[in-house]
Amino acid sequence: MTEPAHASGLGLAGKIILVTGGVRGVGAGIAGVLAGLGAHPVVCARRPGERDDGPEFLPCDVRDPDAVERLVARIVDRHGRLDGVVNNAGGSPFALAADASDNFSAKIVGLNLLAPLTVAHAVHAVMVSQPGGGAIVNVSSVSGHRPSPGTAAYGAAKAGLDSLTASLAVEWAPAVRVNSVVAGPVHTEASHLHYGDDEGIAAVGRTIPMGRLASPTDIGNAVAFLLSPLASYVTGAVLAVHGGGEKPAFLDAATAGNEL
Image 1 (cartoon, rainbow, N blue to C red):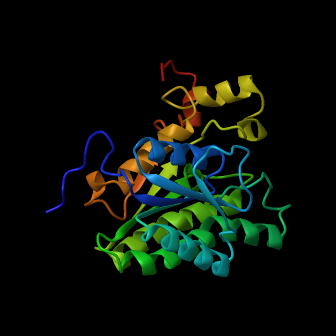
Image 2 (image 1 turned 90 degrees about the horizontal axis):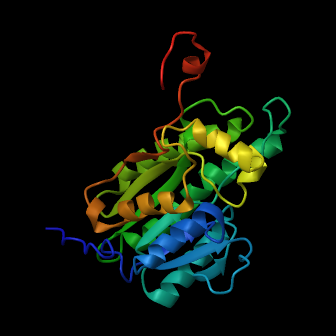
């Protein structure tokens, strides 16, 4: 029988958890939540963040299978195990599909779909051979579940990531749990690149039923639950963390009165 988690730390105290792309934005928020729960996050990115007092950092380009293998080996060599992985690294600049080059689209799919598979493959070999197995959480996006104009390759990759999550969950159970967090718009230091100034960010927030963009901590809380013993029977799940989604456009266009 699974041991109950401690409410104070969700049972994550002392757990070694890799967070890809964990030096800024959503990844930094996830790492902060995990550290606050007593886990030991190890963050990776191509370059370190600006802060020197953050979690343990190891450089890695997650698109490079050899670099990923070396990263996982270093973590296991240092800590003796790897309990959890958060495939957070990803993203895409705005580019209309008709204007995007084949090379551009391939890079976006590589970062947002193939890289998480590369990381998952590398950590699977560790997790299946250690007591207690492990857990993987893929950070996906609402862009994979509705039209994504301007980031079509990104949306397609995230849809693929959710499909990958379901398949790996079946293949790797019961030793390794694999779940996905479908994030809605998140307010980070880069939000202005997508939504403009503070007024633009607030306007986007008003289109969400909860009335605001998510914070990185909101995503981190959901990730922490899926990594924790509280989710010991949860695998193959696609958990929406989007504040209720987006209000249908027809409600604003309709002339009949409504208060939604």
